[in-house]
Image (cartoon, rainbow, N blue to C red; front, side, top):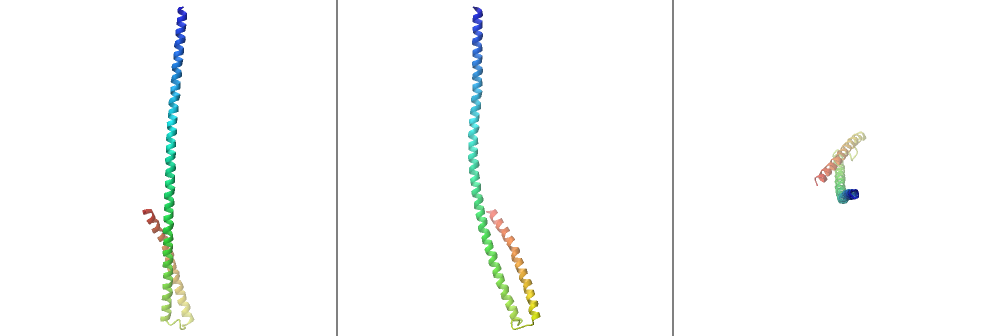
Length: 148
């Protein structure tokens, strides 16, 4: 009988050890599952934040583009106005010079040709100066929008 009691005690001890080992295994699985659920929740929150920041960034970028377009249009208008005003002013001055030199009444064709060449050269220089102002106006626009 003592062998049976010893054998029964060993079986009981083995069953208890097996049950404890199974509970430890299940606790480990539970901890893993809980950590996975927590990580999934954090990932979902991060994804929501990324989407919100992305939308905000896109909206801000679109606003900057619209502002830049408006400033560019305004600067182009001002450049065109200045060019038109300068062209008409130059034409008026040419007319005054011609009338003061009596070229409109019929000067020599050589004099007229020479003056025409000088006028063309001056017009080209004025146009070059106006064209040189265009990039400067864009730089000014860029500086204004980056300060905004």
